[in-house]
Length: 452
Picture (cartoon, rainbow, N blue to C red):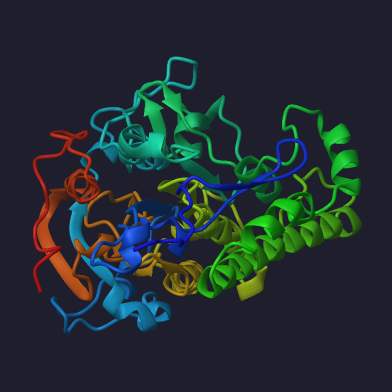
């Protein structure tokens, strides 16, 4: 028998002028040739993502009533109704090392710095910062060699990384939840344009902003730059793969267009405000753009590990889109003022609505024998529960996705109060094939993620 089916390497790129390159999504042509006629199949990789929201949550409208599959979604979780069977609500987890432990004030800095590491960070506003290696970076060090980028760090709020940002704690702690080493934070990229250029390599990021802006003004779409390579490849593929590439490249171009509109709007509407080009003027559009970049990065297997900081700890963001013109952080210190509490809940609901947007994108993106959501493990949460009291116990935590079949979601699991958050991370790392005996203050792995 002669097999003529084209076989592509998984790491295939469309290449164009200069450094322009677009990685391709998983195609049928990337499976071994015999897989199409036999029982063999290419296994999609497992992705691990962390989405961080700041300043705690209004827990009375977060924690579901009931456990197991029969739990009742609360007001803040209601936007996730259509993904009920795709996620866990996890209660009882804590970040003990976010507490003062003799260091006094600074709960916001400690919450952000310890959320993924379980390590109590050193109280300093100087260069001698000390935290712990985060769960995402443990995964990146283990699986990162298989992708173009070991990990992707994104954020929706700019912040300096030096100086004092919280009661004597360095801004590095409030700005970064990802830490490559105990002394090396991984600051998130907050500019969608820069994140896009990093992923697809279409401009020299070392250029000064003015020169970069002039070049971007005359630059063609990256899709134009790789057009010849695209046409050559598409002519050799089957109908299903041609459709996949068409849908994928359409998504890339849509993101380009949204970034271009944001750059134009920022220039015309806010000419006197120094703001990075490419950031939309409304927060919901900003967050959606960052979520879309994560989806593209996973779809093209540019990375399998990501973090997104929706807002840094102590965030002073205002939300006029939902009639909340007051800064977020002060509202969380509501002193039981019903009006302030209601505004906090509106912010919490907006954040879960945007997370639902992310899950929908993942669920609607084919990947191997399922979808990106099927092959992902997405943690959504905060290093604080009650922002008014700066509580680091019983944290608000969601886990979405099926981990390539290793997770059985659709349940509310209430763990024993005081269970280290890092126990969850150890379990997820294990599901990803990353064997780690210890992470921060972990005491073992959590149970019940695979049993129905």
